[in-house]
Length: 225
Image (tube, rainbow, N blue to C red; front, side, top):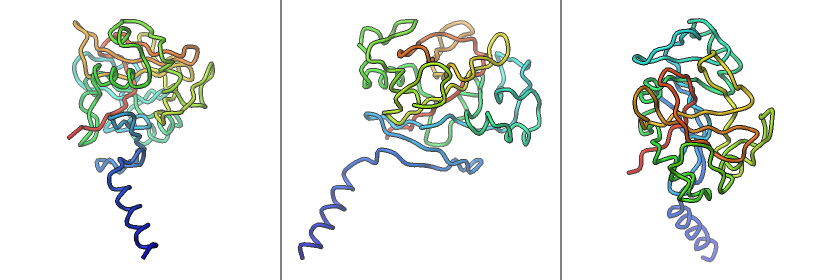
């Protein structure tokens, strides 16, 4: 009887406690992603890798979706997916593609979603809306992976495990191994959108604007019911 009671208590406790990490499958391409719960939010614990097509490095658009794989300059989907950077860092999306590429049940996080994550990790509320690097709480250090950075490192303690996938910017591909850049769904006015930046030589988190045609990484956040 005591044995059965213990089992019942374990099952009941597990039922009321939210799972902190796991995996899910994107049915569009059967790609399996890790996820992690941080505070009240559930985030993908790796970069989005959805790649319905691939664009050449010099194909930049304000309107229309573009998808890039760091270091690959072609249009062959199989070749792009066999690239080691695709396997490790996922896809770089222009902002229009980023806004439409998260799997069903997930979404591109807004500037406010990121702010909720940052304040949970210790950022001072008066820094949340600043357009620059914010250092309070060492948020960047907590979000970065413990390995894979050419300069500096993170702790990986929250399971977000940001990797320095670089970007496709003004001069083509850059910052691989040094910085991670993530689109938000929030427009910044004109031809810009808000993004977050994490770099190996800084323990903070950057809230800055980028041109909509830039290629940045995506971390989706789960819809809350």
